[in-house]
Length: 198
Ligand code: SAH
Ligand code: MG
Image (cartoon, rainbow, N blue to C red; front, side, top):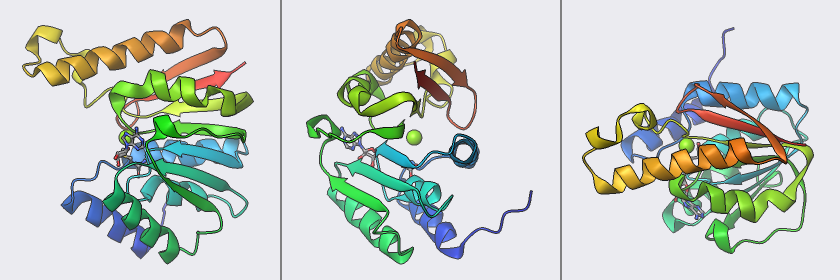
Protein backbone atom coordinates (compact mmCIF):
# COMPACT_ATOMS: atom_id res chain seq x y z
CA UNK A 1 0.00 0.00 0.00
CA UNK A 2 1.29 3.43 -0.88
CA UNK A 3 0.34 6.09 1.60
CA UNK A 4 0.80 9.72 0.76
CA UNK A 5 1.89 11.37 3.92
CA UNK A 6 0.26 14.68 4.70
CA UNK A 7 2.98 17.35 4.72
CA UNK A 8 1.74 18.66 8.07
CA UNK A 9 2.09 15.14 9.50
CA UNK A 10 5.66 15.10 8.24
CA UNK A 11 6.28 18.42 10.00
CA UNK A 12 4.95 17.10 13.31
CA UNK A 13 7.20 14.06 13.01
CA UNK A 14 10.14 16.32 12.25
CA UNK A 15 9.35 18.51 15.29
CA UNK A 16 9.12 15.38 17.47
CA UNK A 17 12.51 14.19 16.27
CA UNK A 18 14.24 17.52 16.83
CA UNK A 19 12.64 18.05 20.24
CA UNK A 20 12.94 14.42 21.33
CA UNK A 21 9.21 13.91 21.80
CA UNK A 22 8.57 10.14 21.96
CA UNK A 23 5.70 9.86 19.49
CA UNK A 24 4.45 6.47 18.33
CA UNK A 25 6.49 4.61 15.79
CA UNK A 26 5.10 4.10 12.27
CA UNK A 27 4.40 0.43 12.84
CA UNK A 28 2.40 1.19 15.96
CA UNK A 29 0.40 3.94 14.25
CA UNK A 30 -0.36 1.68 11.30
CA UNK A 31 -1.59 -1.02 13.63
CA UNK A 32 -3.70 1.41 15.64
CA UNK A 33 -5.36 3.06 12.63
CA UNK A 34 -6.10 -0.30 11.00
CA UNK A 35 -7.49 -1.53 14.32
CA UNK A 36 -9.81 1.50 14.50
CA UNK A 37 -11.20 0.72 11.05
CA UNK A 38 -11.55 -3.01 11.72
CA UNK A 39 -13.38 -2.61 15.03
CA UNK A 40 -15.37 0.46 13.97
CA UNK A 41 -14.03 2.46 16.89
CA UNK A 42 -15.74 5.83 17.34
CA UNK A 43 -14.91 7.16 20.78
CA UNK A 44 -11.35 7.17 21.97
CA UNK A 45 -9.63 8.24 25.16
CA UNK A 46 -5.88 8.75 24.95
CA UNK A 47 -3.61 9.14 27.96
CA UNK A 48 -0.43 10.94 26.87
CA UNK A 49 -1.10 13.43 24.07
CA UNK A 50 2.45 14.76 23.72
CA UNK A 51 2.14 17.08 20.69
CA UNK A 52 -1.02 15.49 19.33
CA UNK A 53 0.54 13.25 16.72
CA UNK A 54 -1.20 9.94 17.52
CA UNK A 55 -4.51 11.70 18.30
CA UNK A 56 -4.44 13.41 14.90
CA UNK A 57 -3.52 10.19 13.12
CA UNK A 58 -6.42 8.38 14.81
CA UNK A 59 -8.87 11.23 14.09
CA UNK A 60 -7.89 11.19 10.41
CA UNK A 61 -9.08 7.59 10.05
CA UNK A 62 -12.72 8.62 9.79
CA UNK A 63 -14.63 11.86 10.24
CA UNK A 64 -16.98 10.53 12.88
CA UNK A 65 -14.21 9.59 15.31
CA UNK A 66 -14.03 11.59 18.53
CA UNK A 67 -11.01 11.70 20.77
CA UNK A 68 -10.35 12.97 24.27
CA UNK A 69 -6.68 13.15 25.10
CA UNK A 70 -4.80 14.05 28.28
CA UNK A 71 -1.37 15.68 28.69
CA UNK A 72 0.30 17.07 31.82
CA UNK A 73 3.21 18.88 30.19
CA UNK A 74 2.21 22.45 29.33
CA UNK A 75 4.59 23.03 26.46
CA UNK A 76 3.51 19.82 24.76
CA UNK A 77 -0.14 20.50 25.43
CA UNK A 78 0.18 23.94 23.80
CA UNK A 79 1.98 22.44 20.82
CA UNK A 80 -0.76 19.81 20.54
CA UNK A 81 -3.41 22.55 20.54
CA UNK A 82 -1.65 24.24 17.63
CA UNK A 83 -1.31 21.01 15.70
CA UNK A 84 -4.92 20.03 16.21
CA UNK A 85 -6.00 23.46 14.93
CA UNK A 86 -3.78 23.13 11.87
CA UNK A 87 -5.78 20.05 10.92
CA UNK A 88 -9.09 21.71 11.78
CA UNK A 89 -9.75 18.88 14.22
CA UNK A 90 -10.62 20.95 17.29
CA UNK A 91 -14.24 19.80 17.19
CA UNK A 92 -13.27 16.15 17.27
CA UNK A 93 -10.18 16.19 19.47
CA UNK A 94 -10.67 17.44 23.03
CA UNK A 95 -7.43 18.22 24.83
CA UNK A 96 -7.21 18.07 28.60
CA UNK A 97 -4.22 19.72 30.25
CA UNK A 98 -3.88 17.79 33.51
CA UNK A 99 -2.19 14.88 35.20
CA UNK A 100 -4.20 11.88 34.02
CA UNK A 101 -4.26 10.46 37.54
CA UNK A 102 -6.22 13.53 38.61
CA UNK A 103 -8.71 13.29 35.79
CA UNK A 104 -12.01 11.64 36.46
CA UNK A 105 -14.30 11.07 33.49
CA UNK A 106 -17.89 9.96 33.25
CA UNK A 107 -18.17 9.02 29.60
CA UNK A 108 -17.57 5.63 28.07
CA UNK A 109 -15.15 4.90 25.27
CA UNK A 110 -14.70 2.15 22.66
CA UNK A 111 -10.94 2.37 22.94
CA UNK A 112 -8.59 3.66 25.60
CA UNK A 113 -5.02 4.17 24.52
CA UNK A 114 -2.42 4.33 27.30
CA UNK A 115 0.74 6.04 26.11
CA UNK A 116 1.99 8.15 29.01
CA UNK A 117 4.37 7.32 31.88
CA UNK A 118 5.46 3.70 31.40
CA UNK A 119 5.75 3.04 35.12
CA UNK A 120 2.21 4.11 35.95
CA UNK A 121 0.13 1.98 33.64
CA UNK A 122 -1.54 -0.01 36.40
CA UNK A 123 -2.73 3.26 37.91
CA UNK A 124 -3.93 4.64 34.58
CA UNK A 125 -5.67 1.35 33.88
CA UNK A 126 -7.43 1.42 37.23
CA UNK A 127 -8.39 5.07 36.88
CA UNK A 128 -10.04 4.62 33.48
CA UNK A 129 -11.25 1.01 33.54
CA UNK A 130 -14.77 2.17 34.37
CA UNK A 131 -14.76 4.41 31.29
CA UNK A 132 -14.22 1.52 28.91
CA UNK A 133 -17.29 -0.04 27.36
CA UNK A 134 -17.97 -3.73 27.63
CA UNK A 135 -16.09 -5.38 24.73
CA UNK A 136 -13.98 -2.23 24.41
CA UNK A 137 -10.22 -2.23 24.11
CA UNK A 138 -7.46 -0.95 26.36
CA UNK A 139 -4.31 -0.64 24.25
CA UNK A 140 -0.97 0.16 25.88
CA UNK A 141 2.17 1.31 24.09
CA UNK A 142 5.84 0.81 25.02
CA UNK A 143 5.46 -2.68 26.49
CA UNK A 144 8.95 -3.59 25.18
CA UNK A 145 10.63 -0.37 26.28
CA UNK A 146 13.16 -0.47 23.45
CA UNK A 147 13.85 -4.14 24.12
CA UNK A 148 14.90 -3.51 27.72
CA UNK A 149 12.20 -5.82 29.10
CA UNK A 150 13.89 -8.76 27.35
CA UNK A 151 17.29 -8.07 28.90
CA UNK A 152 18.79 -9.63 31.99
CA UNK A 153 17.97 -7.30 34.86
CA UNK A 154 21.59 -7.28 36.06
CA UNK A 155 22.79 -6.01 32.68
CA UNK A 156 20.71 -2.84 33.04
CA UNK A 157 23.08 -0.43 34.74
CA UNK A 158 20.77 2.40 35.76
CA UNK A 159 18.64 1.90 38.83
CA UNK A 160 15.87 4.07 37.43
CA UNK A 161 15.72 2.05 34.24
CA UNK A 162 15.64 -1.21 36.20
CA UNK A 163 12.76 0.12 38.25
CA UNK A 164 10.84 1.12 35.12
CA UNK A 165 11.44 -2.25 33.51
CA UNK A 166 10.20 -3.94 36.68
CA UNK A 167 7.03 -1.85 36.55
CA UNK A 168 6.38 -2.72 32.91
CA UNK A 169 6.75 -6.40 33.79
CA UNK A 170 4.36 -5.98 36.71
CA UNK A 171 1.84 -4.36 34.38
CA UNK A 172 2.29 -7.24 31.92
CA UNK A 173 1.43 -9.72 34.70
CA UNK A 174 -1.41 -7.49 35.92
CA UNK A 175 -2.98 -7.65 32.44
CA UNK A 176 -2.52 -11.40 32.13
CA UNK A 177 -4.08 -12.00 35.51
CA UNK A 178 -7.00 -9.61 35.04
CA UNK A 179 -10.04 -11.81 34.70
CA UNK A 180 -12.20 -9.10 33.19
CA UNK A 181 -9.97 -8.86 30.14
CA UNK A 182 -8.38 -11.04 27.51
CA UNK A 183 -4.99 -9.76 26.45
CA UNK A 184 -2.59 -10.09 23.56
CA UNK A 185 0.96 -8.76 23.42
CA UNK A 186 2.22 -7.62 20.04
CA UNK A 187 5.79 -7.09 19.00
CA UNK A 188 4.96 -4.04 16.92
CA UNK A 189 6.61 -0.65 17.21
CA UNK A 190 7.76 -0.47 20.83
CA UNK A 191 5.48 -3.32 21.86
CA UNK A 192 1.72 -3.11 22.30
CA UNK A 193 -0.65 -4.76 24.75
CA UNK A 194 -4.17 -5.15 23.42
CA UNK A 195 -6.62 -5.97 26.19
CA UNK A 196 -10.28 -6.59 25.45
CA UNK A 197 -12.86 -6.10 28.16
CA UNK A 198 -15.18 -9.07 28.54
N1 SAH B 1 0.70 9.52 22.24
C1 SAH B 1 1.74 10.42 21.78
C2 SAH B 1 3.04 10.25 22.53
C3 SAH B 1 2.92 10.41 24.02
S1 SAH B 1 4.50 10.52 24.81
C4 SAH B 1 1.99 10.17 20.31
O1 SAH B 1 2.26 9.01 19.94
O2 SAH B 1 1.93 11.10 19.53
C5 SAH B 1 3.99 10.43 26.46
C6 SAH B 1 3.38 11.69 27.02
O3 SAH B 1 2.70 11.37 28.20
C7 SAH B 1 4.41 12.77 27.39
O4 SAH B 1 4.17 13.93 26.64
C8 SAH B 1 4.19 12.99 28.88
O5 SAH B 1 4.29 14.35 29.27
C9 SAH B 1 2.78 12.48 29.08
N2 SAH B 1 2.48 12.01 30.42
C10 SAH B 1 3.23 11.22 31.21
N3 SAH B 1 2.62 10.99 32.38
C11 SAH B 1 1.43 11.64 32.33
C12 SAH B 1 0.35 11.80 33.24
N4 SAH B 1 0.37 11.23 34.45
N5 SAH B 1 -0.70 12.54 32.86
C13 SAH B 1 -0.73 13.13 31.65
N6 SAH B 1 0.26 13.02 30.75
C14 SAH B 1 1.34 12.30 31.07
MG1 MG C 1 4.60 5.56 23.38
